[in-house]
Length: 547
Image (cartoon, rainbow, N blue to C red; front, side):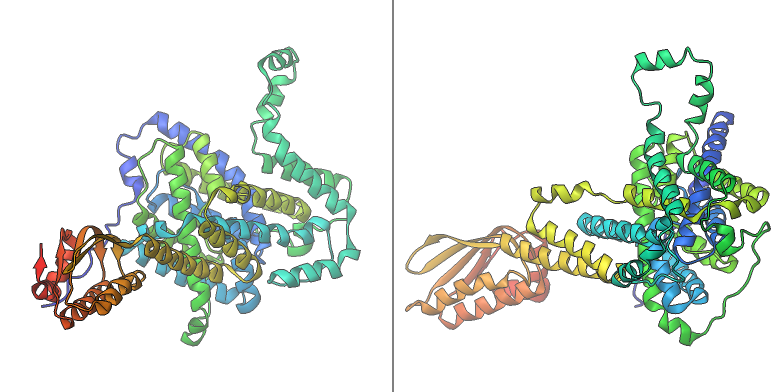
């Protein structure tokens, strides 16, 4: 008889469900939200690409193509996909070690892996990653993003930044003499502006009524609703251009952004190369899955749309990441900042995400020549702001309220992410999570004596008898072997909730020790899972008492 294959997840994009009952009111909401997010995505997409060691158009076309595909095929109603800050460190490291061509191959391969994860209904497994591990590597990535922007923020003349943490610090220190005060000033103004812009109209009602008497207040109020990164990009770029400030720009480093559609091209591929890219591929797929599903959970909490389908979302992420490399793009995933902006702008369906992609494409095609005047220090300021918002810094202060296990997992993941890389950090975090879970469960298991006569001792078992807890039965075996006369052992298993094969083997050894001394072993109150294992193995038939 052939083994039964696991059922595959159906390919049902949320867009098809949301279009049922779609009306003009929802379309208006989606058009407004999509246009807003498209404008917000413009500076972020360029900044993420440049920080990743790529040209700015790589981020723009990833935001457009992947954003369109993820919204059209995804399993959420309001999530926005595209290049994300979490990928900066990973992509930069891959480009440094393997080159851009191999990054494209890794991204496409990760897309296939993501699609298979969704197809085989493995989307829910991402939820098993402990929150302490997620917070640890998120904060670690935020630190690395901030460090990667110090060069452009300070205007240092560094030809190429290395990928690892200590080398970056050493390189910055070696070139600190090329500090550019103009670039630093633009970066500082950008960061300060990004922090205070959303607060411009967070004033009390009395002051607001006084402002309303001023004729220009309505224009200022309308302006305050513009996305802060866009305002910083436009105003500071105009200021730097008007004053002819000696700062590096997109034009001076990259020659501007092409004002045409990206060309379809196949990257050079060979199996020898693919074998070298296993680790980068797994890293991209793992990070993409975690980020997209975490973002989808945030969207569920903030919006009143139906809960996301994790498997459909992973399949959409897989298609997007498989397609974008053929147009020179970078890895894509769900983006929390743009998704939150989409929700707060009134998005009602995935149509908003599609509009966001079309809006961004229109802006790029019409205004690409203007991008050459954007100072890199301003984009660095935007990314420093992103890194600050990305990190969950309050969690460090809350560590005192949690167990040592939680602290160890979070801090070790955080430090390893910074010093080594994300893959090692997540692997270490998961291994620690498993080891600490086993230790905690083994501490929970107990075998307490509850009755004793000359011929029999009775113990009550609590918790799970598994490979990490079997040593606690050694005391019962030792007591049986010390007894001068045959001794019966009765185990009350009403509080034993589970049993694995190692636990069953420990009971077998206890049975042999009791039987060898002329006594009997019995179990009473056996729960369904332990009962099933004991009966299937034949152990139940060998016991003196079993019920």
